[in-house]
Amino acid sequence: MRKGRMRVTYAVVAVTGVAAVATGGVLVSQGHAKTHAVADTSTSQQIGSVEAQDAENYWTPQRLASATPVGGPKAAAPSTGPSASPSPGTMGGRSVTAQSVPKSAAFGGIPTVGAVFFNNGKGNHYCTASVIHSYSKSLLLTAAHCIHGGRGGGYSRNVAFVPKFDNGKRPYGIWSAKMLLVDKRWASKSDPDLDYGFIAVNPRSGRKIEQVVGYNKLATDEGAGNWVNVAGYPSRSNRPIYCKTKTAKAFKYQIRMDCTGFYGGTSGSPWLLWYNTKSHTGYVNGVIGGYQEGGSVSWRSYSPYFDSDVYNLRKAADNRA
Image (cartoon, rainbow, N blue to C red; front, side, top):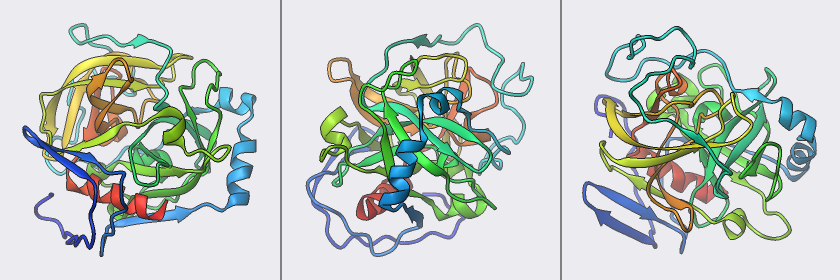
């Protein structure tokens, strides 16, 4: 919880599911019954069936190929920490590399992670998103700045997800969005500590996305110093990349990780704890976002710290999916 800010108290009327306590944190595995929060801090936009179909039709192979990483003004400074770039050698943009950090590698992608395409009023763009376990079996997790412009902005349009997108290939098709949701404090203040959001997608051929590609679970309050696998879609590659690296505390409510190659387009990339190499799934404990919408250099990336705020936001998204 972020002390010193006005908080909303959550009262859960009914909770049925699994909450496993691990060392230093909580593993969240909701999916057997819906939860109901009396109050929340979320804001959402529902997308009608006609608009959703239009979005699916909109993303032709040509538009997918020409989409660029999301841009825009940098987020406000974190709650605690410097306002300038935290790393030496920064020259503006996520382009300077360090020699002593892990290196990313291109790979064929995994079914639960993909590229999310959208139009934010300034052109066609893309970020990275991942499937997150939920009662609705329909939720994706990404960075808030990918689906909402923050203070003074609005929700993106023509939002669609392509799981395991790889050099134009769409092995699981295009999944149109039916609901977008972010924290009100992101929408009103562009709070970088809350730079995460959820997308609910429509079924395809009568099947929900979890039933087709699988899912990752959510992990909160795990601290820092954890090994994570990070996968995303950088602008300088036609293929997804991955990296195994260790998290560190960055600011009061943000963590960071060092790995080369995470250029624009990787916003929203999941940080997967306890990654299973056989199922290609894990527990999402962060997404690239937060400080300067993920960082100012390609080898150091940031994430909001996952605590009860993201847990409650996921519940709100599930209830509206």
